[in-house]
Image (cartoon, rainbow, N blue to C red):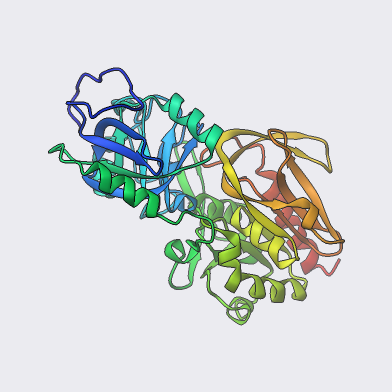
Length: 398
């Protein structure tokens, strides 16, 4: 547990503070001083922000954050502590975190460990005591910068070297990170969603079989698949079409994941095209959505700041309904690049960007956001039911 301490007023720039034990060095030479939290050391990545009010543990363990330093805009981080249930992967892929205030003392019946101790145990480096509002505005207006986060209790910082390292980092554009977070071999998954007083359940009577291609899959997405009746087999990102089809799937799922979809698509797109030719129902989320679009002939691009939070309104064009969604992506599909036979199904009400697509002649659809709601609202759970219905219909030969 971290020691309580007085935090000076948040700062965003200027000379080194005598009390500072951490710094965030940006590629443009900007230095942001604060208190170090979590592990000691340094890490380089893209500095982004997340506007979620809850779910910091799920966010930190989301594989889609590989290569990124996460700025939390909500000030009370640590208030529910940590536990071994609310994780999306065992080894976090995020590079570090940035907080407004010192870690809040935990106050929750499910807490088993203080966040600071949890960060140390997972080698996650953080900085607290800075003006996250100003940093968020900076990212919003100028785009997500490269940066180095450094925690040094001895206050020994080589500022020029840290800025140089940030400048030298190539950024996420053109970077394939799915290989870093994907499983190395296939495995079975039968755990279902968490419920109060019962915890996680088990799917003991599956109605169909789904093969999930792991580009950085979140555990709760797999739980949602199991909860709607699926026996789930997870395969690595590099699995061939033959590897996937030998499992005799009734449905195929393309998971979320980090990095540039065009880079991952070098090996994923040919496989997805072969899978599409089979006519087996297919559902993609996040990176899986982007890879599906590329396989269909569409294009993707890097967004200036991306979408990261649990309050993003998305409109379902088929029903006219608006759902509040959880999102985490820095690339998007260009809807104008999609060919005939591919319909835009969902759009962002923040910026009009593409949030989903579907094929008019095959049981295939995908969404950009995270419908498993971990963390976030449950408005989009219906998508897993929709996938299950497509699978059941396909099995009946309808």
